Length: 262
Image (cartoon, rainbow, N blue to C red):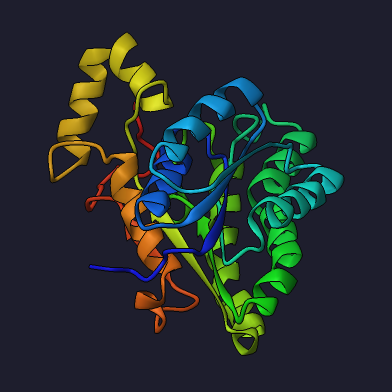
């Protein structure tokens, strides 16, 4: 299926590995020019070369999107190097702190700033550039943790991911007359080299196998490419009647609330 993305410009945060890199590569395969953003400059350059090899224009822009001045610079450099912005994938996200007793207020603030506020900031910054090009698409990467509570130190992470899911519809309603759509993709547990689940698979293989067998009806964790395919579809006009939605990409993952083995 031709998604009609050739010549569009996409900005992807957290793009040096995992879902972010897979999304950047999938967009490039559809003919998108792509700006990749991450904090680690060397890894970002290497990832950008993989995307560039697909024959599109690529901008590798190291930036800390938690800082408002660097977020502004990221958008400005994307527009300067690639000519505009049609697609924003808010993929950068992390957790800091553990449970109620251990986590400081700063852990909660940092986690919400990373997963919620910086994405709102970037969306606000790119919206005028999308308007100039007749509209655009914004996709937030949330998580299964946004609706299934877990015990393993993810209170603030899950709450911040739930906030992403909640805000998609009102944000979409506000931007709809600017022809800018806003959607959320919520992945389940995703396995990729160097990621958290890969570390658990290597260092505690028996526990990992048990969790994989008990929690996944399809018998495995997901891949970054399987998430990226959904993101790219939502970024395209082929999904023009999908707006303000949360799309689960979790293989019907069935984690038992409060009972994850990690």
